[in-house]
Length: 384
Image (cartoon, rainbow, N blue to C red):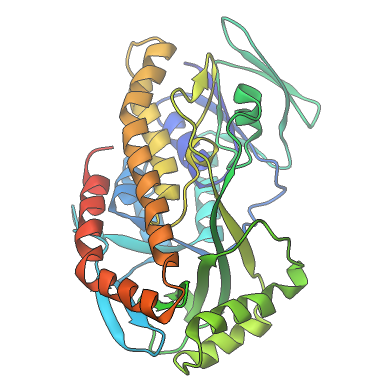
């Protein structure tokens, strides 16, 4: 395997490009966006993702960007502490969860990809893909073309590469949930991620560097309404306020959402492409193949793992088809388990719209959630 095109310069695409370049593959990366701007400001990475980053030489730079977080602290809407839930065990001296800035990570990973020899073209996409027995010819939107041994689509939930492979067979499916995210000033007392479980969802407060935090609001929303982006701050405030009822807990911080900038509204659509994720010399990975709800914070980690595992397997003397087959055997069961569990956790959270249902949900968090998450943590801690 001499030359590979990675379509998509997000977290998974860049990490895959680095993994491939480190084993001697020539890698081109194209990205339809003109820059690294992304909706939302923060994301978390657990031990499994950190292990994968260590394997491709990004661990130290990642830890320098972010900070380890204490266990998740759950509160009820009135500020009464309910339970602390850890992110799993710690291994090899690494933290079990790190909170990271999205833009900072993308800029760091882009720079590292270029250092190891990858070519990155922004504002560029594939307009024509012509595979044959020996390779793939790709026409690009900038008028150039290239010849590749393999094309890998890391182009997200609305992947054009997935559409090329499968048509409209595997389109994003609404999960019923939505997420709002916005950066605001953090109170001095916020030292770790804090989730307030309210009516029909939660309001989360996650600290970032520089005295900031991002607030996340998740809830069920009927259909796929289109909101005016100018109204996002007020709508996010209203959703949070409705969950908290007449409580004064974190009221100032919630009120600050009304003047927040960079508010992201994300319907939590999902994609789960069954076996296989490839057709000949074109394949998909990451969100293009398995976009999941964010309830285990593992969507990005699964994408990073995809690329690292594929690079491992590519170092053998196997044919490309055998590499792809072994890749699917390792990845599909693991990813599907995390995908299923993330979706189940979301639906359980939303089943709390009445006072009685909310009390049942809080009891579940104390009595059942820790054991359920310990099972998931052990899956994430296992070999990828």
